[in-house]
Structures are given as C-alpha cells and as structure tokens.
Length: 181
Image (cartoon, rainbow, N blue to C red):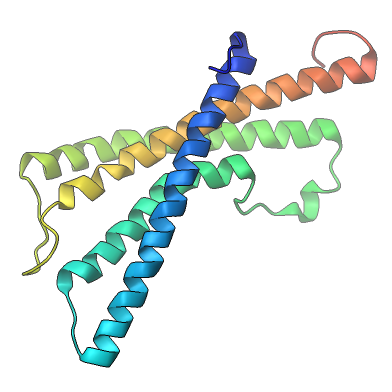
C-alpha cells in the first residue's frame, strides 16, 4: 500500500485500486464504442443484426456505469450543485462534504445488501437471456451490481479519510497547532 502506514497509506491503496478500475472502464468504453459502431454498420449497410451483440452493448454499458461510479466520485466528476457550496466557508464545505460522503456510504452499503439476494438467485438458476440468441450469462452482469457499490463504499471510506487528513492539515495551517477544530 504505497509503503506507508496508517490512514495515508490506506487512502493511497484505495485510490490506486479505484484508479485501476477506472483504467478498466476506459477499455470497456472503447470496446462498447467499437461494438455499437459495428452493430450500426451491420444493421444499416447489410440488414444484419444480432440479439447477442445488442445485449452485449447493454451489458457493457452496465459494466461501465457500475465500475465507473467509484472512479467518477474519486475524480469529482459527479454532479454537485455548486451554486450555494461555492460561497460556503471552509468549515461549512467540510461539513457538507462529510455529510454527503457519509450518505453515499450508507446508500452504497444499502444497495450492496439489497442486491446480494437478487444476484444469488440469478447465480442459483444460472440465469440466461430470455431472448433466443441472447447472452447466456445474465448472472455475470448482475454480479457487477454489488461489486460496483462495494467500490463506491470503498471510495467513500477513502474520501472520508482524505477529508479527515486534509481538514487536519488545514487546521494546523490555520492555528499553527495540531488537532482538529
């Protein structure tokens, strides 16, 4: 974990993992773009379509979203209303950030809990596509639901630790002493 101990090393380890997942989603995105372009060309130039290929587009989109959520959160690419936030004091921004990350953590853990039985049922029946010629591994894509939200929860923990560490630094810089406000 970056050779460091404590919260700093933990944050670095979490961020490295989420960066790796982000790089994976880049490849999923490129694969999806190529697949969509190929499907469109085959459909409109040769009147050829494939249920399997169309389902794969949706499966790749699901993977992109579920695996990319944590990366987007880490990079700050999530949607946030800055109209009021921009005028807040550093202390108020810290409180808003902590509360929002805690809410994200709770929601992501709730999604993990709620999705586990859903995914387990899919695995137990070896769920496949209901469409003839569809993808036979529906259970595999459903397995990304709890995985994606575990990654969001992990990113939330990393974000909380980073907020704690940065708030501690800001407090030291403001007061000249250690400790937290």
